[in-house]
Length: 182
Image (cartoon, rainbow, N blue to C red; front, side, top):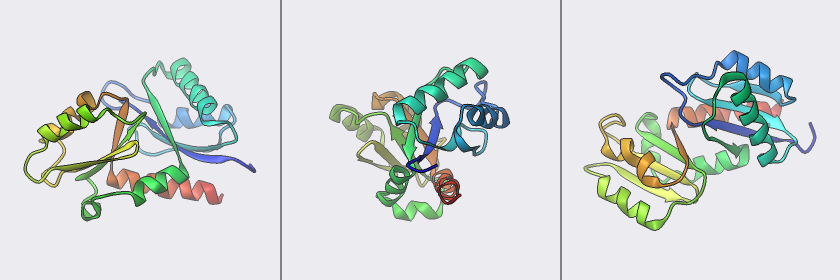
């Protein structure tokens, strides 16, 4: 598809009681005309190619999810170019070796500076974070589950956000790049 963009789609809040059946999601995205739509693990990740503008594509995906699966939570989309930039801009390259200790939060918009100041109060020990544009990077060498910074970022940040660990970030890039080459 000439002039088409590859997008990585991030569904917020998938897991536990909220599920998006991956095979059925791929099927419905394909039926809607999205090219070579795919999913990655059952935690709210998809990728597709389309000539639609981002807003139109997001609305179509949200409509499918609501109609077919009763899923009515925020959905974020980054183009492959934006995803590559997210990886390039990582301020904590030492965290890449342990992909589960480094996380990227995709943000719908840039949070207010007072929200970032509140996050600074939560970071303890070796925990670090940095806001770069509309991405918040968290490096948590002692683990995500025990970190107050990690568990409270979502509420404190004040904007719609969804996080992926670095292993998932890298895998989504690989899948999206394969789609771009197809």
